Image (cartoon, rainbow, N blue to C red; front, side):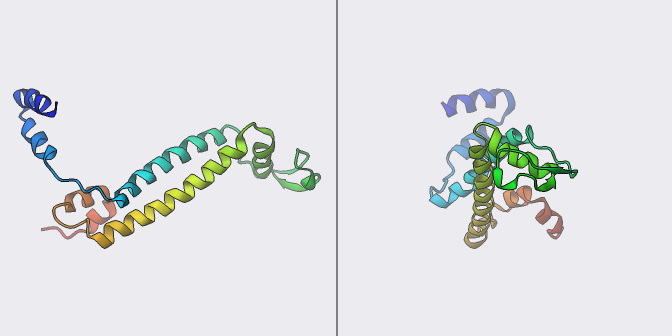
Length: 148
């Protein structure tokens, strides 16, 4: 299949030879390579749950007196933001699950990102022949890289 696609592209753009070279590259299959994919999946879950929670949150700092479903806080003075967070938790159907998914996906994303960065550092995955990938994926490093 890839040979046919490479041949079709090569006839039109001469890029097929690049595809043939990439197809024969060896890709390691260690479990630690999944950490980057865990980061991306956690980011997607965190983004989707954050958009859901965004519809019900009011970031106002005005002081209000709480009179919602959570009885121990009745009559307490709080910001409208905290009141809306409590309303999300106790009055929106399924929102406690969404808040927990948001919380745990954010925590998992940070942990997996740190483990992924440590794996790249300790295995030397930024060295030749992958230094170009490292420089493209980390703009702060590419600015600090010596020119010439």
